[in-house]
Length: 209
Image (cartoon, rainbow, N blue to C red; front, side, top):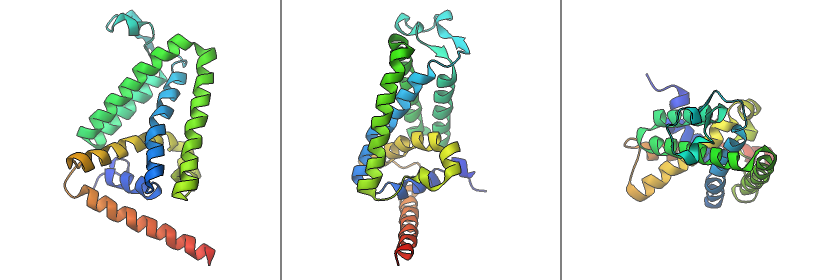
């Protein structure tokens, strides 16, 4: 029995690879996806706290005043665990990045305060999202994956946006060090990407003709 689709790394790679084949568009997403996650966590810091870690005194004093368990920490831990389930090696690094983002975002949010933080976040989010849409419109010349399915856009957009840097990370590891989650992974994914792009191009050509 195969893996459930939610945990099928091949399908996630193929799905996003088909929408991100242009090198410039890939670079834009690589630069902007994590800042979107990071600045989102800054706002999450101001959600109701489940527990204030400063009461436990388990972290350095520089962090204790800022760290609380809330929706931001829950989101970060969930994504980190999910990435590890997808692939233990690269997923562990992605999980570490999620944790680092949560620590950094919490510290910055505590220092800025809500009145300034939301303005910083708004500017960063507008810049990052604009860059990504520009990448699709100018370089990829294909609408973002999230615009092709409204239900997916509403329910799964945060998941896929945060999944992208992890997918690119594995690609970098593979190209530099020959790393693959398992033998033959990259070849099968590339075949699926080519098939999906061809199907999209054929549909596009039929609409034109």
